[in-house]
Length: 128
Image (cartoon, rainbow, N blue to C red):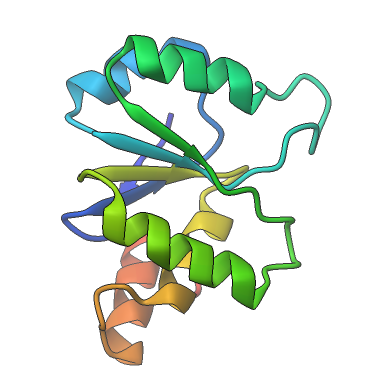
């Protein structure tokens, strides 16, 4: 698990597994947002399974699937709503973390400048 902190409130990661939930809880995350649709690839952990393990670890789990390369304005709007209501800190994940980082950048819930978003992305290894 390779977690990259974007802000105090949000970090992103590649695909997580049910075995990661205890570690995620120990790291202090209060909410997980899954930005990956089920069955994107064979043998990918199902959202339902991850949600059950997150609940057992005391972490809120929200499912906001975004099809890779097909992010919609509705996806951005939904992320904005979820982000505003979620307990922090938040861990958002997808296949590599890029989709989650771009979703955050497009939503811009912290009202950052484009330059600041770009800098944060570059520091985390993403082009936003």
